[in-house]
Image (cartoon, rainbow, N blue to C red):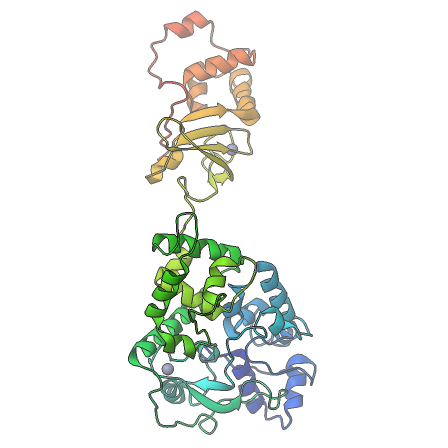
Length: 454
Ligand SMILES: [Zn+2]
Ligand SMILES: [Zn+2]
C-alpha cells in the first residue's frame, strides 16, 4: 500500500521521485518499495524508459492525479526518443512503458542498435545540486541531465559530472537517490574547446526545448523531406534533391568540428562511403538516434523550434477546417469544412480553392488569403446543396416571404432566389416575373458575393 508519494521537484526524473519515496517510506528492503509501487518486487528500476507505469499510476491515484501519459511525458525520457520514431513504433514504446513487461522497450526505441553511447552513471550539475540543496534541502536527479547528448547544464553552462550511481546494471531492483555522497564535486577539467562547449550548450538547450514541447512522432520520411528542402535552400543539393556529398561534409564538419562530433559518438570522415550524415538524408525508412537528428536540425534550420514550426507545405488558405458560408445551414460561419481542393488558375497562376461542405454547398475562391476577412469571401458558388434548397422552399412556400426578404435571409442576390424558385418550381408569393423585373436592382452581381458578417 502506498500511503504518500513525494511531489516531484522541477525537472526531476521519475526514478528519482521513487528513490526519494524509498527513503521516506523507511522501508528496509528495496523489494518492499517495489512491491508497494508496482505490486511486484521484480520490477526493474529503469531511469530512462521505465515500464509498469499503469500499475504505478493506479497505486498513486489517491495522492496525485497523474495520468499515466503525464508520468511518461513529464518524468521519463520518452519525449526525447518518441518524436524521431515512426508513429507506430512510438506507440509501441509507450504501450510497453505502461505494461507490466517492458522488456523490449530499449530495442524498440532504437537505443540498443545505436552507436551513440548511453552514459554509464547518473549525472548532475554541481550548480544545480547546490541550488537544490539550498531550496529543497535535498538533492535529486534531474531528467535533463540524464539525456544522452546533454553534456553541459543548459541553465548554468557548466559541464555535467558523473555521480557514482550506475545508470544501468548494479542493483537493478533498487532506486538510489542523489546525495552529496554519491555526487562528489571533483575539480573542473576543461575537456573541450570553447567552441565545442558553446555547441554543447546549444544542443542542451535544444533538448530542453524538445522535452518540454509535446511533439508528435513523425515518420523518417517527414524529416528527410525537410532536410532535403533545406539542403536545396543552402545550395548543398540540386533542385531535384541530389545531395552534394563533399560540400555537405565540408560544411557540416566546419559547422561543428571533429571534437563536437566525437563527444557525441557521431564522427564523420571523407573515406566512409556510407556515413550517418549521408544516410539520414537518403534512407527514408531507417530511423536515427535523436542526437543525429538534432545535429542535422541545428545545422540546417538554426533552432529546433524553427525547424518544427516552419511550414514547408504551401497553404494559401491556411489550415483546415474552413468556414461554411451557407446561410441556410445551422453551422453557418462555423469552421466545419475539411474538404478543400487547390488548383491553379490558368490565367493568373493564382491558387483556386474549392471548398466542399457536408451541407452540400460547394464554393470557390481565388487565393491566397491575405487578410482575416478573406475567409468570408466567396468567388463562385458551384452548388448550393440540398440544405440550402430546403431552406429556400420553406422561406418561400411556408413562411411566404417576399423575394428580397428571402434573398436577405439566404444572403444571396434576389436573382439567385428567382432562378432557383423557377428551377425548383416553387409556389412563390411574389406575383409575376414582370413585377420582379420592374424592381430596380441594387444587388451585387450573382456569384460574386462578399459576406461581411462583422
Ligand atoms: Zn545546472
Ligand atoms: Zn455547410
